[in-house]
Image 1 (cartoon, rainbow, N blue to C red):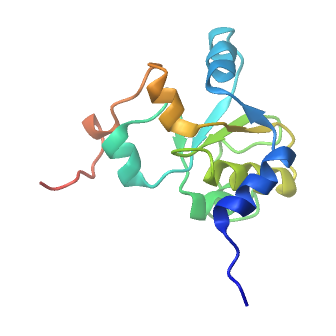
Image 2: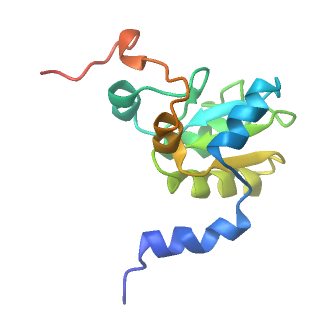
Length: 139
């Protein structure tokens, strides 16, 4: 059996995934659209690089458990009425996450094309997560 190439697989899912560019997200925020931002990266990625301000940290491995109201892990920022933008470092994990949320029944979900990397490269605001995190990388 041949192992499926993950990049090829995710790229094949992109056309099924609602997508926002970094500039579209920034514009929607500027217009005051109520979007719930979900940061799928690992905690250490947030500490090392920062995060989009106001985003909720939801590790990719916990997404479905935190988003399911029937689970004891459920987080209250997951509601049927909310609109979500999921992002990761470069836009791969967020494709899978957006499709998972849509499959669960969430109706308004987008993945951020280019992820946090493109957001930071565009010079948009970045929250210094390390300044308030309990966890730090040791020298």
